[in-house]
Length: 99
Image 1 (cartoon, rainbow, N blue to C red):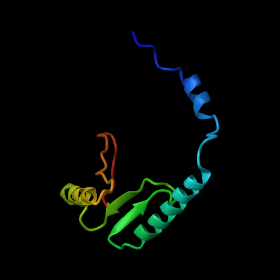
Image 2 (cartoon, rainbow, N blue to C red; image 1 turned 90 degrees about the vertical axis):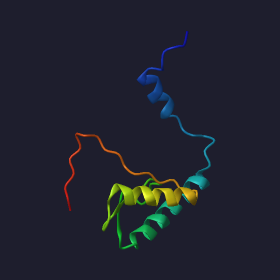
Image 3 (cartoon, rainbow, N blue to C red; image 1 turned 135 degrees about the horizontal axis):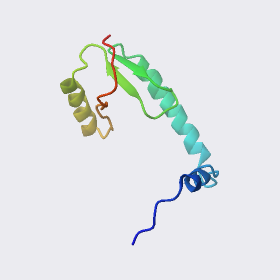
């Protein structure tokens, strides 16, 4: 018989502990790489990019052809270059404005 999952209080206490073995230099390089990547993406005039420049996750929107087929094609080309891209999925309750 498996044990129950930890209580939220236990999870919160665990996640707030310092990461004593974490390489702070590696984290600093990640942040700098994210900033440079964000800046490079901003220079492309056919996309819009949102989100924090320090985040490794980027939300990129095509300005001209934002069709699902075009997005899936780009994701496939990225996958062939060992890059991780995915087409965003939304719930039916989310409302979008057409720009």
